Amino acid sequence: MPQSRLKATFMRGGTSKAVVFNRADLPSDPALWDPIFLAVMGSPDANGRQLNGMGGGLSSVSKICVVGPATRPDADVDYTFAQVSVKEASVDYSGNCGNMSSAMGQFAVEQGLVRAPANGEAIVRIHNTNTGKIIVARFAVSGGESQTEGDFAIDGVAGSGAPVRLEFVDPGGTKTGRLLPTGRGRDILEIPGLGPIEASLVDAANPCVFVAASALGKQGGELPDALEQDPLFLERMESIRRAASVAMGIAPDLAAAGRIPSVPKVAMIAAPVSTPTLSGRMIEAADMSLAIRMISIGQPHRAVPITGATCLAIAVRIVGSLPHALARPGDGPIAVAHPSGITIVDAAVENADDPARVRAIHGAVYRTARKLFEGQVFYQPPRMAQANRPAAAE
Image (cartoon, rainbow, N blue to C red; front, side, top):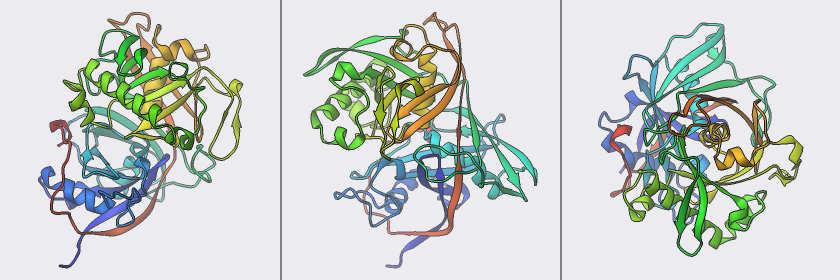
């Protein structure tokens, strides 16, 4: 049987890469997408390498994005994100990817989905269907095409490029409807084998649960390889994630939480401490606001997801939260130290000292993005596939 093929674009957004589709090139029924996405990525792969597809064996490069006409009046385009599992036949639509969000405006302009000036600044209002939130992307256009050359560099990506400013507007309650789903800045979670552990459960850009590294016997600056070799740590982080999912109202019970692996994100955080990076460079405590190590789909992340960094920045602004307690005091931009370096984010919050009335006004971050290739992607859909698809993603 000959292979199937679809028009596609391969793009880098921040520290992630994804195959990007124009919605018009996919089947009109989203229920038919999952087998295609699995086959395109080369999943499931028990070897964890996705050599038979476009994936790269890591959650940060096993991603699909779909962009099409807007379905609400305050947006220019709709954007749906799909996290494809590496080893399992699972496609998860329950959260967004902030890094890939930085490439969606460029894709929309070059596909003719939005009108932009031939030269100057393009402003694209993106409706992320996963979270129901608006993301405003601002980037330079030259000669009718997105400008990619520039001097702006981000840790984790070689070279430099033109900056893309992402503004997450009113990002609170993406999944649960509340910035603080439990109504508190801190909660106590009962974790089997660990006992009670203090955590901050925050829903902004993506739902996240933050725990102190010291509560897990860690310093907070461990690199991903070291964390991957600690199965007890990974098991405890997954238990914390599932307990938080139930406490936040995302899942009704722990078993159901296990079937929604991408949200909430789970991370350990630490007060400023000298930490190594994957490149061998040391980040000094004086150069950061706080350190983070985030787990994504059971794997220690090589950087920090943009939605995770945005949620962390907002949490830092909430008086009484763990991030607020651990971060270096100050009202300026927040320097988040992660395994690949530092990400600078900012956030504005109203009623920061009142958990019942607190509101996130916005979170902002700068990234770079560029198109890597475009053409046709070939695939052979598997006969059976499982997917975790909430109705909001359709």
